[in-house]
Length: 177
Image 1 (cartoon, helix red, strand yellow):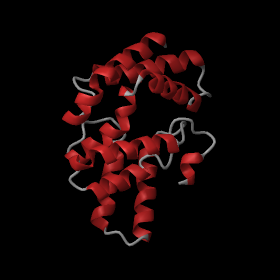
Image 2: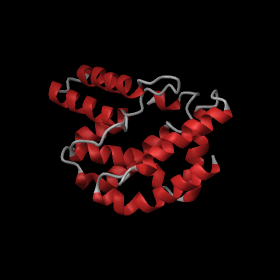
Image 3: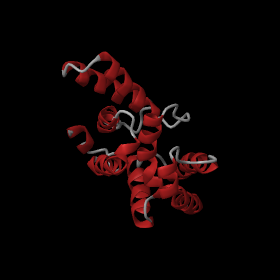
Image 4: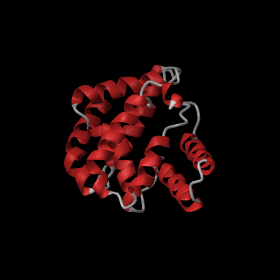
């Protein structure tokens, strides 16, 4: 998708999409509706404008539009829409497919240290227009919110694989900010 190649993107790129799809391939057996989860993954960051607060909604709307044009049923379109909105990360996902999608999206938090550091630099680059002192304050708030959760990951599979390293990465990023 050309949207993932937009020049203002540093993290929300084809690299992120590829990492998400690779993780999904490894955990596909956790999905109740694999095809729907995969569609949501393809579109979950299709719209990404760092100055906007409605990227997920706009991505979901784009997905619905494209799926409607392709003749996909309204039930599947609605499900993809709902799954993409789950990536707002403002509530605990309600069902297994949403939990899987959110865990895949957040898996970067538990990446090996070199990849997490690259991710952290990429996010900063996407917010290069924010003054350094303000970025550090806001970034710490976001990272602390993840760290404050009883469990960062929703599924036992992702918890076992990434929870401990995510907590180490988050603490390190918070201390470095």
